[in-house]
Length: 212
Image (cartoon, rainbow, N blue to C red; front, side, top):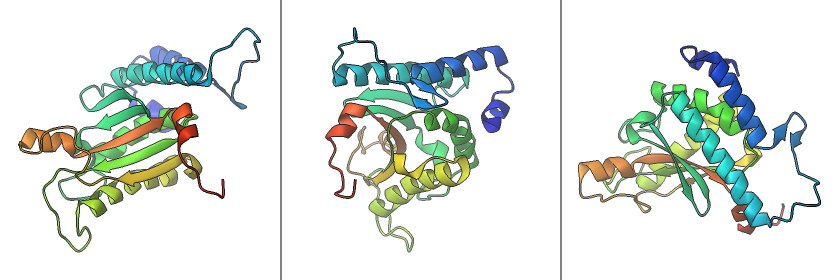
């Protein structure tokens, strides 16, 4: 937590501590782990509970991003599969590279403790534009996007102490664009890293290995 507190030394400490308390309560997390209500009057379906939990995470993340001054750099979008924390392309990597930039490290250090406290599975997804690449390290955009995703995961595990069993990585190359690749602006939007907080009901529907 030291890195997070250091990163917000210029904001109101009282507001931050209140937000952290709210975040932990919103996630249903105490020192012993997730809390499940035993109130017999609660008859919500699993899907309704998963949606409520996801909405709580979305609110807390949005407040945190605003408090940290990350609006415009980090966006949170809700999809059927869960929440997508989306980063602007120029923040994480240089064009055609997969080494985390100093700005990316700073953001991950600040956002990491929040993501680490979320009980949901997290998937890191790498995406590129449709401009071809052919280097010794990256023969195609498949390799580039996958390496970028795993680079973020390794930082989470090796530097921030994330549990590996809650993380997964995927690289989609240029094949899941969110904008038109015919313009520089569109290509910039398509070059991105998404951190997907998977909803519990969606995760339950995903195929698992026979070892699980």
